[in-house]
Image (cartoon, rainbow, N blue to C red; front, side):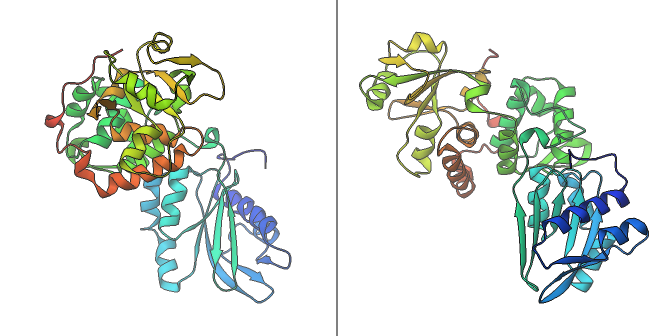
Length: 370
């Protein structure tokens, strides 16, 4: 198939999904009724059989032209889910495209899925069958229709606060703390609500935030070395000498990435030192660095927004970015940094009071825009 077909009717979508499913089945396996029989009878029952050499099993097939993470909750309250629980029959969702967040929520609910762009999760014990295909590129994932993109400084400010501060708080409070407009904050929260990344109460008040899911979702629209202007460099006398030189530097700067993550959640010896600075080129000589487009062990980053310095903290004379910023940066960094980011998320979940604030009123003064 050339691409996702959101224009298909649910009946046509279901047939297209079953045609793809038939093509994915191992030799000797087939569907009953077949996709051709379903095509000739649009009113055919939504229950199909997946038959293999040693037997078969029933599957309830549900087609959705558009399914958001929040929409999974509606699916779990629908008639197909009631039938699944009553008959213990697996439920398979077919859709033109499913975001990574939606696919994860389906899996968490024990629901199988087939995304026409490729991602597939089909597993059953009897007869034994497991089909799993990885997700599409980021570009193929749909963004929330009701909210703006997660790219840019305005989104970053709101997202950092949502991760760092325990709810509840109102839209206006959040907008003021982030230094962005009320209208923008409201639209962003609507999109995050549609993706089930937060829960809202009366008048849109934020009552709960899935901060780990939020950071992973933000990482889909962010990249450490592309979002910020960077200069790669080689430490002339080794990274420890660079760290010693940093201790004497004035002005805004903060360590992020591996060297910040391993302080809290050690995985392995860090390989790349990433530092937010003002003008990266001006820091090369004071830190005894040699600019190098490749093979570098240090990267100096001019932040896209000064909010990366929010909630930075000092330890042993060094300044480190806040854990939520470090986790985001690691999730989108090179090498083993994504694994370091996941390890840091695990630490953050186990030590929420070690990095989250109890209320917006506990925030220090926000960094100046820049």
